[in-house]
Length: 604
Image 1 (tube, helix red, strand yellow):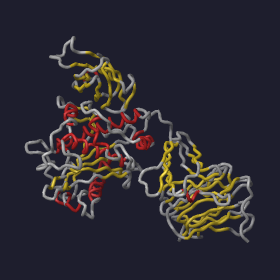
Image 2 (cartoon, helix red, strand yellow):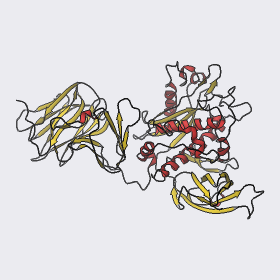
Image 3 (cartoon, helix red, strand yellow):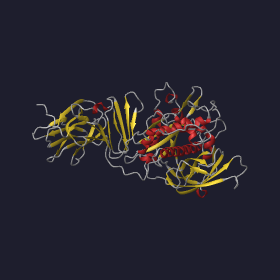
Image 4 (cartoon, helix red, strand yellow):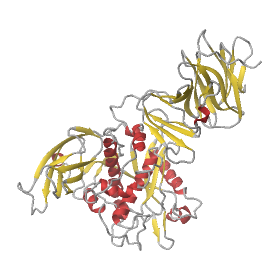
């Protein structure tokens, strides 16, 4: 009859303040409560229900080693006593990863906000209450994600929250100062009426400005002195609008939008409204009651969202849908199931055994995206080797290489939102057969993601292979053959790449692009071969860096764009440069052949 945790091994090191665990009682068909007694009485004892000898519990951890007591009290039992209490001990170490970028929790208030949210008359619906509820939700997100990552074999990995030494509110029994999640209040320059304008309500189907609240939130984040983006770093913010209200006459929730973006100019931002706060728990003691509260929502005072007609479902949807937007913040697209669908309607089952059934999960493709995110880095992770993912056609298929292990390759066909198939290579290279021509590829490792809209551009023609173009601009397509042997490469550039001019033994060069800007020559040594280029690009090619089989050249051009490689695979020889050309180079790629074949003959 002793409690035993089955989801985690003892003496592990974890990185979340609340550890979500599953366990069992070593005797069948028992019910009652499991009391969690924290290390050195550093947190109030917490009960969690036991049904059919199973339990789920949240273990509160203090930084460092934790020695927790699990006290099972079967029911019916008149009072805790040696004869009605069965104890075991669980050891775990909590190590906050302060070196990782945190998720900041914020509440946005209008400049004239009444500092209240929707709830029934007599309820405490203040800014302070909202802060407590959002703080606890952040820790539930963190615990849920840590549990999912570990269950999927990806280690004790989760994001951290921005914390400070503040009066703690995770328990209703005490509120001493602990290192706890900080809730930043952002004062918008806009009025409550502006925020609540129905033309900005995301649920208003007639609205033409549904995304405006995202801009309002982004403005409030950027105006706050603590959220200044510096040194190219990205900040991560989950922000709630306090001034969301239920407009019963219009049957519309205003001041609310559920949106998330991985990069809005250096800010990864997720936004949500306060309209379901009435159902959220504000402390650990309220989690199980809130996630199992069957009362119908009184729509005279509170709005409901889709399935959220009861209190527990409103809590599921509010906490879960906000987590969905945080998924977008961390780079996750929509998925066929899981948090990034609408499976958060089952979120309550992840925290309590009172409602048996299938629980909510992060999709496998989401957790693999987290694996490569800086916010989820573990100290044991190998250092990130600089470089880029490349996908190169070869006779046997498409050769994908990366300086770090490839976590995921997604195959997408035209018209499908979700991948049609996937591969998890977990190694630095993979050779895949040629897929159908309308297939797109998304390749993830710890290096920058590589997306190829269509593999049709990679298909070989008469024994010649072509790299994907970098640069998304459209102009006049150009293809020039590289003279052999190559003696000089002249780079024409200013604030962008204007052209590349190739010289063989003749004094006349072969030009790709134009001769604008300044010019610099890269001189090839005898026998040195061109392997390709590293490119900075966006809508055009900003800069280029020559790469040979022996060395790297200097960057030439401007400073914008993201870095990509145009590199031919081993055992092949570069024979041509292709791309889109306008006033400057808009797209750049390379053609190559098997090194054992003779080079193409330039036209006379």
